[in-house]
Amino acid sequence: MRHLIDITDFTVEEIEGILDLGDKMIADPDAYKETLRGKILATLFFEPSTRTRLSFESAMLSLGGSVLGFSSADSSSTAKGESLMDTIRTVSCYSDIIAMRHPKEGAPMAGSLRSYVPIINAGDGGHNHPTQTLTDLMTIRRQKGRLDSMVVGLCGDLKFGRTVHSLIGAMSRYKGVTFVLISPPELKVPAYITDELKRKGIPFREVETMEEVMPELDILYMTRVQKERFFNEADYIRLKDTYILDPEKLRTAKADLSILHPLPRVNEISPKVDDDPRAVYFDQVRNGRFVRMALIKTLLDWRNEA
Ligand code: CP
Image 1 (tube, rainbow, N blue to C red):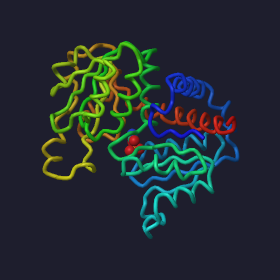
Image 2: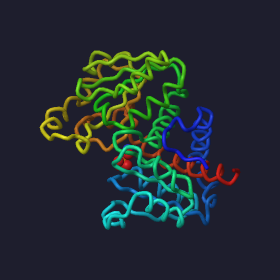
Image 3: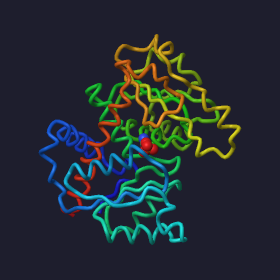
């Protein structure tokens, strides 16, 4: 049985198959509306979410399936002391596939060892967020027509930003990709990721301002400083507004730059940027539903074939 815990659980070919199917679903959603009639998706969210949970639910409903689940640990028997392992085993008796988000890194991986059905990691702490990465890849491919040969700038909280970690894992498998990592020293990408980039010979550099690299970027991936991951509120307050993208900072950017953000945003992109044609963060939101439709269908097809 296949799960999606880390984006590299899938080959490049498998990921591109999911993106292709997502593109077909965007072009003709009606053709898929009965595809998963009778199947049930469980969404187990032990941490807050708007996009990920609702896009999973919208995706399953759009395929003719049904959904159940909870949106906070407080409304489940976790509040009574039930272990994660028992919760997962229980819910896997009631559903055909599970999407789960948890504040502890590794929780979806642990859950997958006890589940009777495929588990999808919908974000685990400051570690990974592979379905956001599918959304990001789909958006970049629809914008640029390719996933190789580009300069990708990642800006903000690169230490706790799980979407950044998964996106680097995915895009480092494409030829000609260079990463520019823009963060204050306190929020640099963890060493286990940069060590892997060095080991594979993938070009990257670390800088502290977006202005110094703006003209060379093909992609600018902005991120929120993750208040919920800080141990110390004073550090959060000091760092939270380090980067604020506004029209002035975009003056030197390429005409075909694509500006992405996994959302939610706080202050890091001025609303004045929203009407710039290079801003595609709400395209990401729209694509997220379709790529999750493609993912759910693919995982259930693989299970049937096994
Ligand atoms: N991008 C993302 O994971 O958003 P939510 O936290 O709203 O799900």
